[in-house]
Image (cartoon, rainbow, N blue to C red; front, side, top):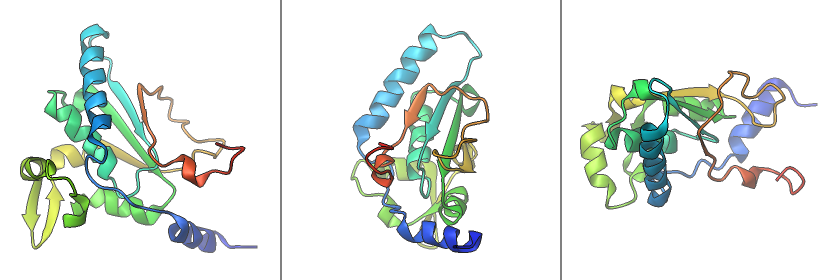
Length: 169
């Protein structure tokens, strides 16, 4: 039987952390449109709630925060939870430090200029966006997952199903 430490190491070995900022830009346009429409029709003071799972090193969750910022929402207007099973990836995500590889679309150059500082060859995300995302270690298949009480308006789960067998999918 594997120890807890061995299980964690195995998880880190089989995870595919392939991600970058604003991957499939139409997803973020849809989030912006939904957020704007919801802001018009929702009770004032009710936050937009978003979950990003799996979040890997944070690019997608931070892209959501940047997309919401671009349409005028402030961090107090929304709540973003980002989950991943890998503690190692979450540590990287919380740091908010990225390389050129996280920026693969030409359109992202202006995003990089607005939200990041170039420091010694890496791109450091600004505190406003970095602090707007709440990272958690968790497994969607855990019976206690999501016990935080949030009902999410937006569920962002790119590549989640690749980790499940057919019956679970």
